[in-house]
Length: 273
Image (cartoon, rainbow, N blue to C red; front, side, top):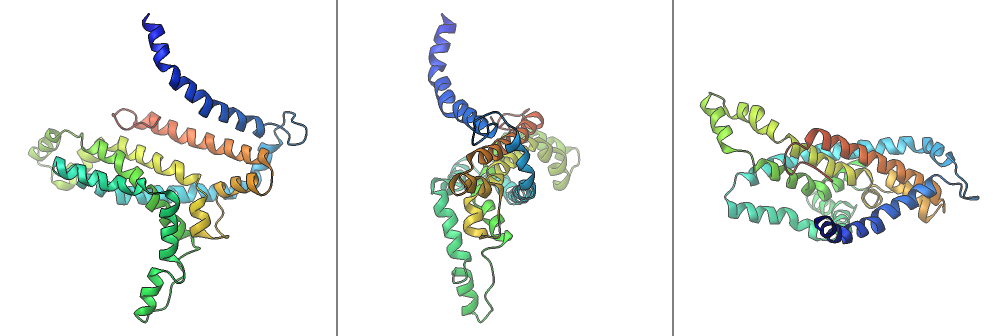
């Protein structure tokens, strides 16, 4: 009776996962492993991936740099929020999530208006008699866009872990003679490791597959693996190669998520599923 009830309750979720997860993954796998002309099984699509390894390496590099910058910026913010009064925590938490309620496209386009040649920053510089800077169309602009869009993904899991650290452990370390730096390095930082790993994963995964940020802020010279996949589907009409690239990217994401779950899944809130 209980098994039937559990199956009935989980039925909608299972149906949703089959329709919107398993079937799309199966379609991607089918096109990645079939010939575009005959539909026969082939590994040629995967062999062609060697041509895009430099682009994949660039995407991974951008994603790693963005994730590390988000960690450096997000950890102090999360630590600060976690040590405020409950009402202040709720307000700051809401303000952290508020940008995520705005369209991703609009947030990125806002930076175009700020960084472009006649944008806000260069207008201020020229108004002060200073030379204009080439800000847009650079790798720095792409990383800035990634950090801005994905920083909340770092702050929120860090906050969820730091706020649960038992205050008595910190007091015990202080009673044993630890100064502020030692308390942080020996107590707070180790206990917040699951949040760090979760935040790094949650930033790295969307950053490595992004394409809109690189198109708007990086220009034509900045080509990431997401841009290549989009072009295979939209312009090159080579959905088989695009599916093969997507399959490799999904495997990379699964590996990163598995590593995070393996080493950071011992605390509640530190797991990505």
